[in-house]
Length: 491
Image (cartoon, rainbow, N blue to C red; front, top):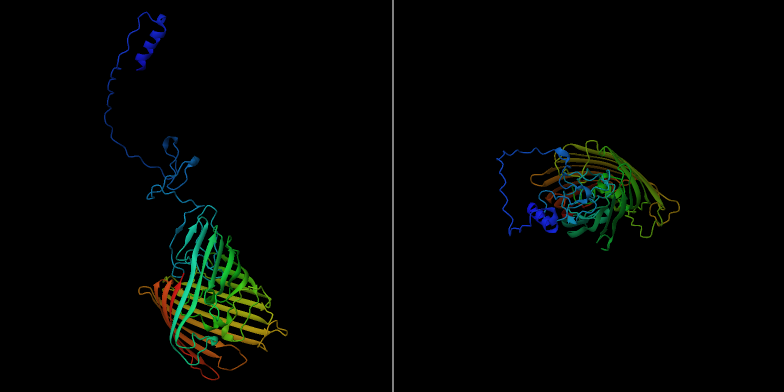
């Protein structure tokens, strides 16, 4: 076309440039000759370069699926992604509910406390942290069954409902003596609700309350704490939370093989208090330490009523300060929070030794504890020793019925086996108790508890049945045996 138009244009505007008169342009340009068709060539199969490698010829390498392309170009969604759905970025993942393994069964947990190296700022937020001072777990075992991720915040519900039926109980059974009930009927043992979470990968927190926790059925605070778990060797937790003393107490109310914790643990472990503690874990929990300060522990004058859980709504008014230390080891790998071996796992062993001193306003109390838990192929064996010595103050800050020093000791031994194929576990526990070594009375006793548990959904939903026989070693024999049934929901 240009070959026809240019000479004509030159001839029209510059007649002196050519001797020939201007010719009329054709109405249609001439048809171009067909291009020759090259002979077919056998196709070759290109060899794809390894991911990230530059292809021959200097062309830029194709980024791997899901990676952000250079210069702000939109990333190609990975295969299988829905067209038009934006890809989640590490800093702002979409709000989704992500089910995961139930805490306790074989899945190991996210460090018994939320210990472990914190992910970098470019990583997606970690799973919601379990309660601090737990003697559990490896990095995925204690993850809650349900999680909600919103940006860099991960939330999970905390729900513990334990509904009990007592078809048989002895006439001398008494709640303040540690018995499960005082008469035949039904009991709402716990109705706990709240939530736990983790912010930016290394700030765990939790808050929950007992909806029927008081003696009159009133609600009360169960736990409320904030942590800083950025370094595995020094994680800090502050608020109302578990005191790192006694493995059975740290395992959680819904994590036991039997319906209730051991009598000795309920009577001699301080449970939840307000304070702070630091803990560190090394070499996959082959060695762990705990050290903390709490408000001074208040003991009930009734031995089996144990320690008062101090929510400190009015601060620390009467009880000064308590100091706690614990050393623990799990040399064959982290243990889950559940006492039962629901994962039917390889051999795992955990051992710990604990000490506390409560410089209280009414009593000075020393406590020592030692515990061992072994799990293997569905079987578990637990042993605990607890020792308390309570010395009344000469000028107590609160009314006190104790007039002389009291030394108490408790021994616990438990064995059990879980048959994963039929979701059934059986356990037996023996306890030996002496609330006051200087007295011989009916509080000196031993107790044998045997029970079975059927796990509908791992440790989340289970039904339990226990029979407890208590035998007084001195004083008047009491009719306080009991049969208890329980249905538990534990999120």
